[in-house]
Length: 458
Image 1 (cartoon, rainbow, N blue to C red):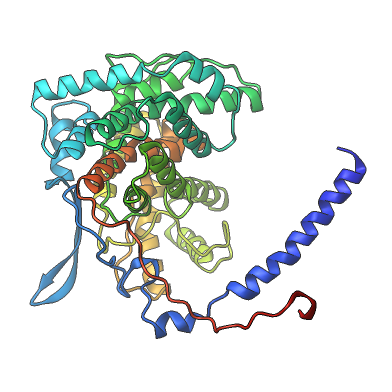
Image 2 (cartoon, rainbow, N blue to C red; image 1 turned 120 degrees about the vertical axis):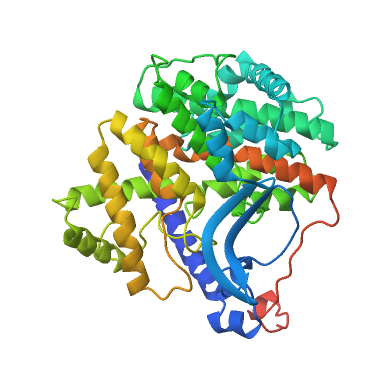
C-alpha cells in the first residue's frame, strides 16, 4: 500500500469517528423512558421471565412452580416434545447408544422413533452427509477461508441456495428436505472450513476426510476433524450428549426466536438458517463457552493452589469487581436468563464430564471447576442484587469438555450450531405450518417533531 493511500485511509477513519459521535448523540435514549413507557427490554418481564409472543409444542423450560398463586423457583427442568431431557439421556445412555439422531427425529416429528424408523432416518442423514458436491468444497470452502468459522458456515449455507433447484419453495415437504440436508451437512461445513483456514492462514497440513455412513454424527465430527481419525468411545459418547443437550431450548432463545421471526416473513430456508447463525455467533448467546475456557485459563495462571477456597474466592471477587480477567465483572458460565436453582443440562452433563476428566488425566482441573462453581454462586449472590438463584449453566462445563476433546476454540460455537440446527429446523416448520401474521413487535417513538430547514440555512 502506498504512503498516500495509508494517509487517505487514516483521514477517512478520522471522519468516520467524528460521524460516530453523531450516532451516540442522536441515538442515546434516556433509561428512565423505558420505565415510563413500561418497555419490556429484551422482551422480558422485570423478574426475567419472557414475554409471551408465541406458542410451541417443541420444547418446554421449567424454572418456577406456582404455590398458592405465588411464583416459586424450583429445580430446572427441560422437556423435548413433553419428554424430560433427563429421561431421554438416561434412556439411550443406559443402552449405550448414540442419541443425537434420535433427538433430531423427536424434535422434527414429535414422537420417539421405533427402531425401523430410526434406522431409516439415520440412513437418510448419512446419504445427505455424502451429498456435498466436490466442487462446493473446492470452490466455496477452500478458496475463501475465513478466520471466523460462524461466518464461514453462514456463507456456505447461503451459497447452498444456489445449488438447490427448489430453494424458494416453502412447502413443508421441501423445507423438511432442506432442513435434514443442512443438519447432515453442518458438521462437514464447520470442520472443512476450519481445516481450510488452518491450512491457508497457519500453514498447517490440509486433509479432507469423507464422512463414514456407519458412524453417528458425533463420531463423524471427530473422524473428519482429526488427522488420524481416531477417537475413544467415551469421547464420542460425551460429544453426542453435548449435541443432545444443546439441540433445543424453547422458542424464546435469541437464535430460535430469530428463526421464527425470519420464517414468518415467508423467506427461504437458507436465509432463515443464516440469520439464526448470525444470532448464535454473538458472545451473549453461542460464544459463552469460549469465555468460560478463557476465564479458567486466567484463573489457573493466577491461583497457586486450586484447592484453596480463600484464594479462589478472592480471585472470583476480583473478577466480580472488574479487577481481573476481562474486567467485565462477569463470572462466565454462572447464571441463566430463565433457570433459578439449576440448569438441568449442566446437571446431566457434569456427571459425564467427570468420567472424561478421569480418562484424560484432568481430574484436578475438574475439581477446580467444581470449586469455582460452588464458590461463585455464593459470591455472586452476596455481591449482586439478583432476583433469583445463580447456578452453573451448560456453558460452564461444555467448554471444558471441548477442551478435553482437543476441539479447536474456533469450532466451539459452530459445534453448538451443529446441534441447535435441529431445534431451529423444528421451529421453522412449526412457524410455517401455523403461519399467521409476520412477526412485528412495536417500538414507541420518543423524540420530538422537527421542522425542515433548507440546506443553506443549516
